[in-house]
Picture (cartoon, rainbow, N blue to C red):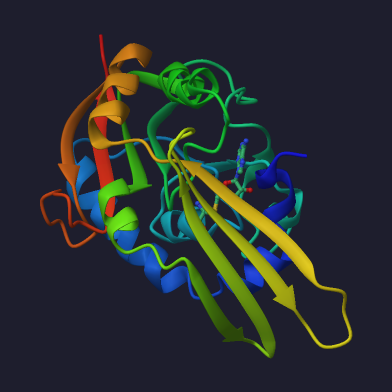
Length: 239
Ligand SMILES: C[S@@+](CC[C@H](N)C(=O)[O-])C[C@H]1O[C@@H](n2cnc3c(N)ncnc32)[C@H](O)[C@@H]1O
């Protein structure tokens, strides 16, 4: 089974509990500042997970809808308006959103370039003319320069053994996690993301009919460079 069908469940929620609503509020501040323009009538939180960004947007009065593959995450609070679906075949009609937001490395999951770039085509398809998007992706150079091959963490009474490696041939950054919880069998998960460079994402966007307008290296609005923590691309649907 594909790694992303197994990993994004109850254990993910527990291990990534620090990726919380306070952080989502800061991300939404950033989106409001940099997507700017006319207030959107409808916003898609693509790969919304448990909906922390969608909830932050809804609190600010936006009409927001989420899509995610994980029914476990969708059922978890804050419970936002959302549907279960695959990001490369969105269960959504054409041209209904003014903004599509894709937060926290929710791209590059598929094995083939075709499927990953298909997600970009889907973003274009569901955007209205003139619609805008934000993709918040890892910064490959930063991840590779700081890759810790082995680490053990103690989290909520569990020991988590982590292995990280870069698969040069498939150009993927991989992370294997082994969870040891008292009284439970050891559970193992994989996370595997195609490590697209900034240029590759921009080419993919163009191929899909999307144009990048600005690239940032953090949610503090810093310019993007090799040492940036993130690769945040903002752009619009091409005519
Ligand atoms: C790293 S999490 C980020 C979740 C959310 N954006 C956040 O910041 O909390 C990645 C999300 O992508 C979802 N996902 C994985 N594969 C997917 C697919 N093929 N289609 C839609 N969502 C998918 C997962 O279920 C998970 O919620």
